[in-house]
Image (cartoon, helix red, strand yellow):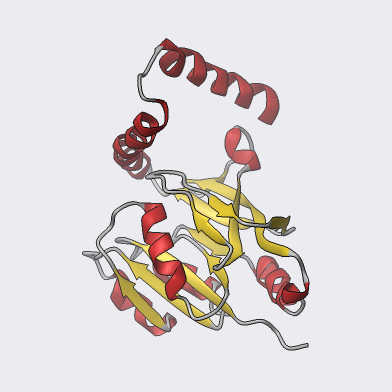
Length: 220
């Protein structure tokens, strides 16, 4: 049986420090799409030798960018990888093997765990330890939930699991960490306000403390 074709989608904005390595990690895909949010550095210039299609769009939020790009992919099966992530050789081989029989299976998407790094060092504890994402999926059956921050795939069907992990180089410096927290704070506030409406002491004190205790007891 012939292998099913696969489109890779890589969203990016000012990712010159990441873009070449992430694109090299998905070069086994039949189509490689860069979704650029009008980068002001040389992200696009560096990416050009490694992509088959360039899409540009003013940034709205992460889920919006991805949901806009997914229908423009040539193939039904999508591998979506953020610029700060890397597909390992082992994950690559697992995906290639799966593609040989993937249309005979009932799954419409696949979870994969992430191995997270902070300033180059692997995070082995806390809530990041069991981090997982759906990144291999059918475009006709999956889309991102309409949220500004930390949006996940909503799948219309069964979701399976891959064994090998995706590498995630979450923060490269303290300044990068602080900058991202500041940018995400406002965006996440919009999602929070939309979801809960009136903010109470439960949301400000009790729920955050509960999250900390959960990470301490379950993930360490």
